[in-house]
Image 1 (cartoon, helix red, strand yellow):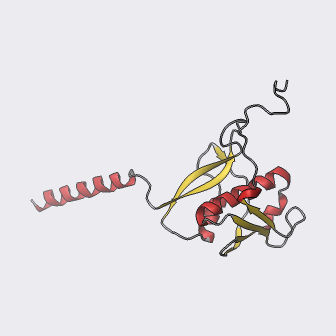
Image 2 (cartoon, helix red, strand yellow; image 1 turned 90 degrees about the horizontal axis):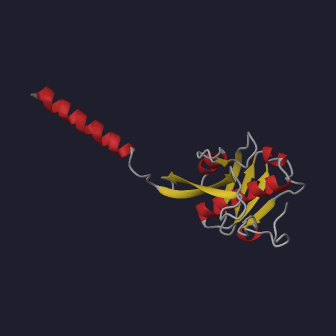
Length: 172
């Protein structure tokens, strides 16, 4: 009889554990921003798309940013960051978040750098509510600058025009 009761208890525990693993995500949801794997002009998202992650931690930390920089889990998205990029330091101020990255970030330029910085800004804003982010490399300049400051108002990457006004009949 004891074996039967033990067997039933074990079965109940296994069923409970299995149902917990299939339950909805718990913790605080955070939007991590990455590049769209397929850029669709005229779509709401354009170049940057978010991926929802869940954390039990409430405050921003190097651990969360390190996980973010490691790249998206969704295969339809791609990381805007160069391989090997790491977080060297993170300082949370009342009006600005300062993030120091490894020198790998200095290998980017042009639109690739702009998109990477915009993704960082949007992710950190979602984590902290602070829309100003100062990005720098540990020892190198980024695009001939000591720091790059990104704010919500400095990002213009949304493509919500179906037709380019310069070419109302389309481009052939």
